[in-house]
Image (cartoon, rainbow, N blue to C red):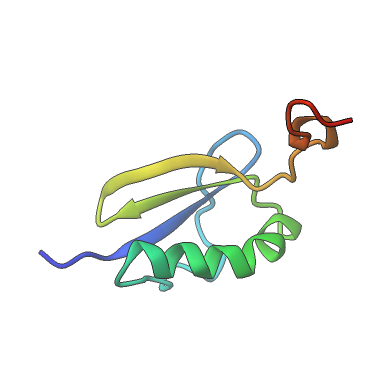
Length: 81
């Protein structure tokens, strides 16, 4: 079986969106899927996507992963500020 990486897009309750017009977006490697998400995450968040799950075929690789920016105090490293 060949690897096919896809993203599942979830709403604020963690429920998958049925169709965002992205159902055909698939990637041959995890790195390509992650690079695509790095470029597109803000558009997805603006469209109402709250989190994503990365899948390889039907197996979950990781997630759900929030698309919300980290709060300023969460992003601060220990010893800063």
